[in-house]
Length: 526
Image 1 (cartoon, rainbow, N blue to C red):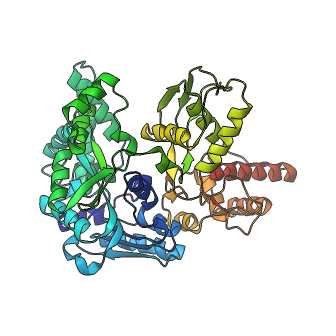
Image 2 (cartoon, helix red, strand yellow):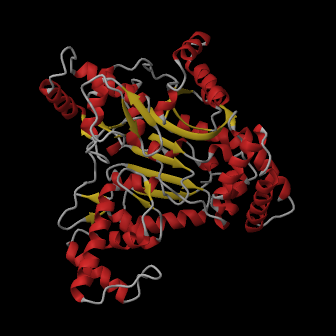
Image 3 (cartoon, one colour):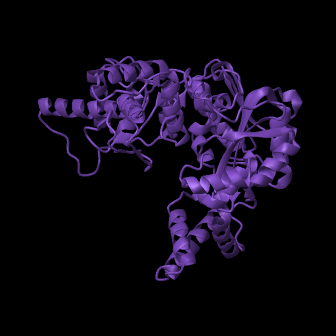
């Protein structure tokens, strides 16, 4: 993403991949704000501004999912705006406006917005542009609006900065972006070999970071690590810069990072003894975590916030979790410890019956979610039927407390509205018009949870056929036609059945598997 005139040409030469970022979605921002007592505009009809929108990979899916919202994106790269506009036209969207412009030209006459998003820009521009970003967040934010700004943080980025300095030193004599990237990769290969046999703490850390960078795309390597500007800051420095523009710290988009749950109680007690100021607390936690990145939420300074979240704040929301029990038959209502795992690698161990009941009740809804009221009703009925439950009280407050604790641990999601997708395949399955347009444009695919989804080529083709007019048999027939015509290539070495009945069975099976995948991936509309 780009917003600085000094590097616009580099983004034109090597466009940055433009993806969706779920934590930047207004529906998510509204939940965080609401938990802290800030009643923002309803996202469905809100106004949204994205600074450095690139080719709209984040903003365009927002506009699709909120057809009554007004979405405006600005970026200095004309090439990326053109790419984004082509997708807007292909998807038939009328509520998104992408503009090629400099942030210096964006003033109060641009209007106010309920949500301002600036992802992947702040650390890659000089100090005067950083100041301009925060000035826009102040001048163009509605009274109860929320601004989202992501940036690299210290002390964690110190190691990345060291590797960046090494690559910049090696590539200093080159000017063309492609040559710079090629030479940077050559240096990374050399450095990995050089430290391969070393066992010092520095070499072990260096090896891990070098290996990680070697697998990244050219665009990521060039724009995230080799641009002229890359200015990580300490969190307290960012907060002070925001305060100077009349803004205040609201919270983090990754809400669970605000709770130091990974530290034992004695450490948490000491942290609270050191300071009762939220900015200072967050900075101390960054020191202990060696944090590298933040996605911080800001609001106007005159807004009053509530820092102690009550369980009642959960009761009007909807709840989801991807956690799965390690045990096939978890003991929900006993004091037995049960272990749970998340697809991202997180783990949870608990003996709390109410917590286990919440996770057991939600498990079959994923990737969808349930209203708190339905969750309460189901858990309460299950508790009444269990002979093991004697003293446990299942009410709004206790269940709200259990859900809130899980949310603070990053183990459940909270949502404002019912899902926009279905998890059961309809007779005539329909993939969103946006995804079908993304397929035609060769873009990354965005599901209806605002996530970028990696979809195999064969399944991408099938998704493009799911327009709500074909049933499974017709989709299978269209798939076979695509292969026969050469539009779609079969995997090398794969031979199709020659017997008509076997051939029909094969294509029907492929379509069934693809539709099941699309349903699990939240890509099917009602």
